[in-house]
Image (cartoon, rainbow over all chains, first blue to last red; front, side, top):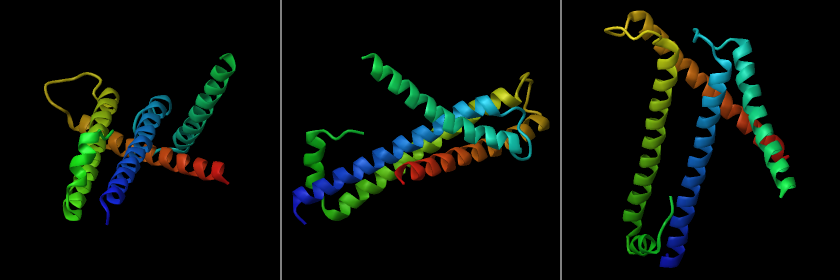
Length: 76
Length: 93
């Protein structure tokens, strides 16, 4: 295997790891935000309302950020 | 994580075995960081929920709350991951 080929492979590896880290970071951030919004006193399981709230919260957060992005682009 | 020229140069001189070792270490390091951040976040969130009035030691009630809180936090994270995965597959169709 030539050096330049294996170098590219290593750079691809690093890019993939960076991408995984970015996804992980997004999940962590969203969990934090939605935990604060949705969860009261921790029980022995998440009740239905809490689970729904978490799922809706994650979806609406993403909707909100694309809404904000579109609106900001229009202002440019 | 960005690679500078010098690092790429040095990595190009490694044997395939050494390169694999480097990759393993990178993966382990990433995992360690994720784990450490998770511990930090859960501690903070659950401390706020469970330890309302810090006393001279953790009471058993507080420990029960911390344990439940941690499990629920992981549940919540699972729902968020699942929601993101479903959404990304919906968007790519």
